[in-house]
Length: 186
Image 1 (cartoon, rainbow, N blue to C red):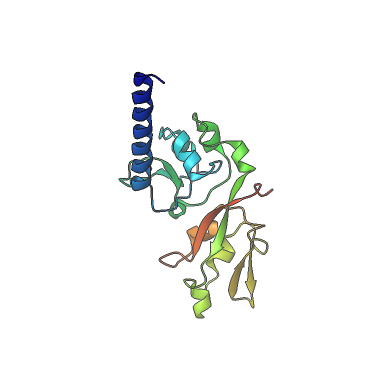
Image 2: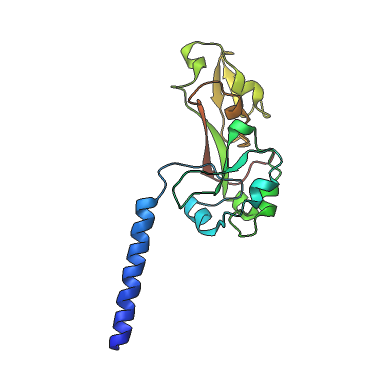
């Protein structure tokens, strides 16, 4: 190896180490609910161009850009279920020019609702059935035990966020989590 080649190799190694260190230091410490059709967080962040076309295409208005000052996630799209529910129209996927959102990923990952019983008022003997009545798959994705306590069934969940939107607690008693597996067949 020539002297020039050696220093070139050293320079590339140092640059790569610096980039990896910077990423690890600035890596987001939050979990974000990305639009449908997103892959892993790392894949999504490497492909997303922050163009906002998916946000503009969303008819329900639940997609918005992150205003967090972390440069890695700044202006990337997330689902905010305070604004409504995902209609599962997938117009966001069609609008995405970078491939950060793809229909192939719908067969790999999906979102499901997860109940946090320690926050849920129904488990504190306060009457509430908001999540149950808001669910488009009532009596399948969410059932009631003893007509009072919600039970979530992820295998039936559409991941639309209706239950999260309807939940009256603060912080919410429901979170939407990404799981591996094919999308639910309506």
